[in-house]
Image (cartoon, rainbow, N blue to C red; front, side, top):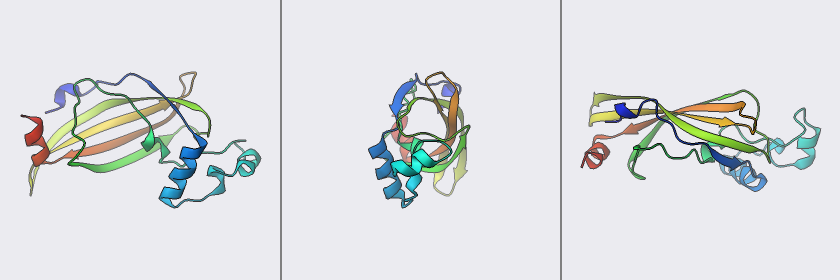
Length: 149
């Protein structure tokens, strides 16, 4: 279904690691480490800045991959991993893009399931990689039927 999209990627999109968004995210996940929102703690840290939680890039805009038109409902978030070159600092600009890494199908108890593997990247203003993540989106047979119409 999406094999022809393997290797395709989106254009880079500028995101900003906003202080208020980081605080709300940290509160939402129940991680109230002061490195995320207390300015004095950030200034006194070895990074000299507040940091974003490791899963914060989940909130970023990674752009659209041409021809990858997934529905807003019915998808299953299979798994996600993050790899960091360095921490994400509050206030910095991050240029993000997504790439289709793989697509495969398996038969299961609920019919034919599709597995879409997407890699996301975040770079600083100079183009140096800050982080990457890999996520698997599970596409149920019910959603697959809607997509092929």
